[in-house]
Image 1: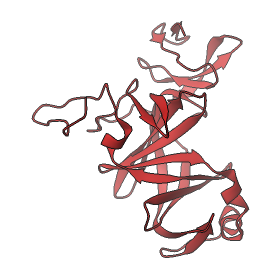
Image 2 (image 1 turned 90 degrees about the vertical axis):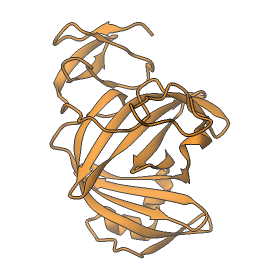
Image 3 (image 1 turned 180 degrees about the vertical axis):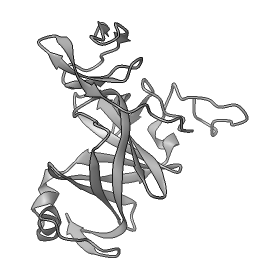
Length: 222
């Protein structure tokens, strides 16, 4: 798709996926929404702080037998750190999220059926989930391993939702012994669930990664 000029600063905003309604201007951080083939500014996204992730918008790879391209990112912060959630546009037109925290990666797809579980319904209604709490999904047992209050630090690229700087959520990460991963997130607008697995970056066969001085990419990565 061709670039479209930002209505706030005139900079070129690259658009890769017509199905994604939001984009962040890479020059002025205006939060933009598609409007009849054009872009309309609806606010500002915070300027993302520098981090040492090798992934960038435009990184390509493959997962689940499909090629993908990284088209967006949301960065979340909490009292002890921050993590990235990268949006992957898959070759079949679907999307996945790649969570990245301290060199650990989770490949996740939305799983709305998880929100029908009694424990997740109670959480959606404001209840608490404590570390060690267990849920069973498709015969797999997941244990709540990480629970935190998070704040959106900003976004970039194309996204399915807006990323206002006052956006906060409660995030619960579950895992199981076989490498399965479940993320449940509750904010003022509702609760969502994301199911998948932990993976190594090399498993995704990525290309177009960012390089850093005095740091070499692991063997087999481009």
